[in-house]
Length: 103
Image 1: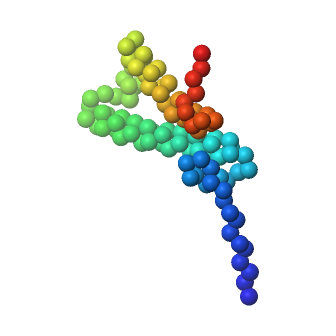
Image 2: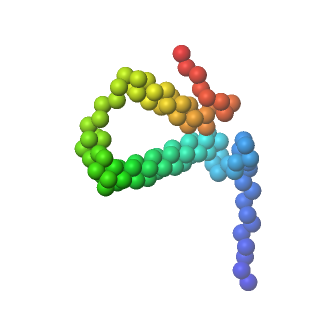
């Protein structure tokens, strides 16, 4: 006769997400880490395809891409996108789930 271990009740964190750790902050950090990893992989995949197509079609070489220097306008745009991305990740550790504001 086999004994079945009863399923452990997994409490739900905010937004009906399961809570795996005793401290819900660890769950939020894990969610942030997994989201960051998914974003990173999507970018790496996209970058690989774009680089391959550019090289195959003779548009750009990888060296040209690596040597590119963004303009001041592009740097501002990248900074704004970076801030948006960071706030999107940080919402997981914010007590209210809202982006954190800092002075």
